Length: 286
Image (cartoon, rainbow, N blue to C red; front, side):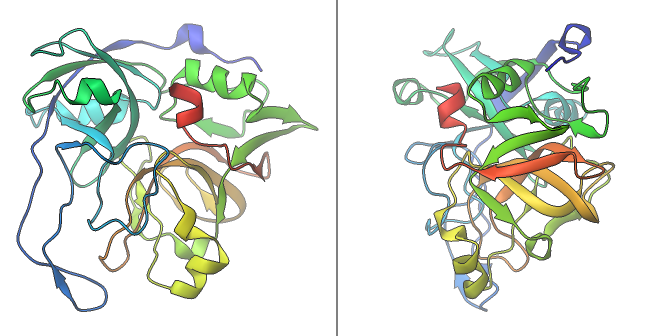
């Protein structure tokens, strides 16, 4: 497929590791209060490819969570950090080591970086990182009714080469691990754009979790959201699709759950998802 990658701008974005946040008891949808880890910091024992369900935490972010401490600059880090972008550590003992953006998280306004385990052990928690922001505005010439967002063009090409993206009979077929019904999408609805942050799959209904196999969701899974349109923010539209990547863990909070960072959306039936359990970022960026 032909894209406009040569016309896209690659520019510098700066982020620092953001310390974990905590606020005492978090009251869940079940009325119980819990004191558990949540967002931020360096998460050593959960990375892309690991289960994002059943974790004793809330909105846990895999790998390294970064944020620009300047509140006027952090929105640009959110908007222009695309999944698959290269990241280089510019300070500390791990200076020069590289990683990859795996998603963004609205509300707390974090971007996530995957690093190899040996790099995580070198980090002090105060490092500065340079992100080569590249990908917003990516378009596929053959599919004018499909919007691409938050996706590095090189990652697009890797997914295409591995046949997780393929053109067939005037449709873009995309490999996904799960298909999510529109009725399960919650927190994040009402946003005016999906180029920043994410929106959540609600997991408070155990029967629906079993029916759609949500208990098998992993960080980095590529998923399809049925009958949702992501042009100018997520909304219901019969026949449309949003394809995205799971970026944070499940949540006990009402209306919340694993977060989805959008990668593709269609105004019509141009997108056709197909199930492939290997459709996870770990198979594309490691």
